[in-house]
Length: 203
Image 1 (cartoon, rainbow, N blue to C red):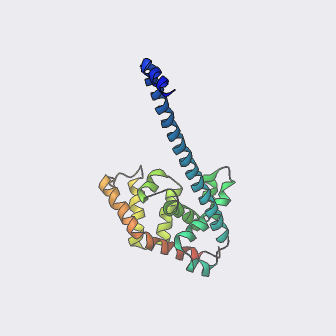
Image 2 (cartoon, rainbow, N blue to C red; image 1 turned 90 degrees about the horizontal axis):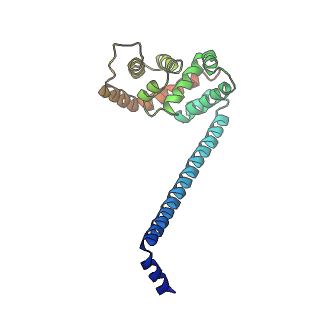
Image 3 (cartoon, rainbow, N blue to C red; image 1 turned 135 degrees about the horizontal axis):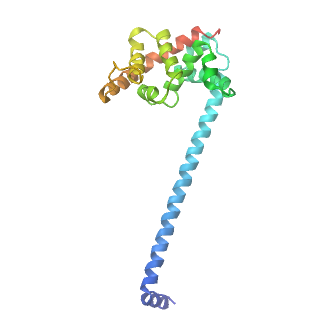
C-alpha cells in the first residue's frame, strides 16, 4: 500500500506539490486562528477583570470619609471617586454640559483620573488627545491643589497643545522633558490629590 502511494505521488508530482502546499496552508491557518482566539480570550478576560475591579472600587468609594481618604492608596482613591462621578454622567445625553454642571472639585477629580488612571500614558498624550473642558479642568485643578513647582508641568502641557498659543515650544525634546518631569512628580501629585479629596469629602 505504501509503495503504491509513493508510486502515485511520483507519477503526479504537480498534484503532490499542490497537496503539500494545501496541507502547509491549512496548518498555518489553524495556528493563526488558534492565536487569534487566544488573543481574543485574553483581551476579553482583561476587560472583564477591569470591569470587576472598577465595580468593586466604585462600591468601596461610593461614600468617602475624610479618615478613609487620608489612609487610602492615592491612585485607588482617585479612581474610585472618579468612577462614582462617571456613573452620574453616564445617563446624560449631553456629557459636556453635564460635566460643566459638576462642582469644580468633581471636575478636577474626573480630569485627573483620565490623566493618572485611565488612557493617557503621558501628560503630553493627555493634552494632545483631549480638549476642553477636560484639559481646562485638569489645569484649573492643578492651580487649586498643587504648589507652584508642581502645577508648572500642567501649565506647560496646556500651552504646548493649545492651538491658540504661539509662545510655547512643542518640539520633540520639549515634550520629552515635559513627560519626564511629570513622571518624576506623580507620587507627589497623587499625595496632593489625596489631600484635596480628603478636604472635600463633606461635599
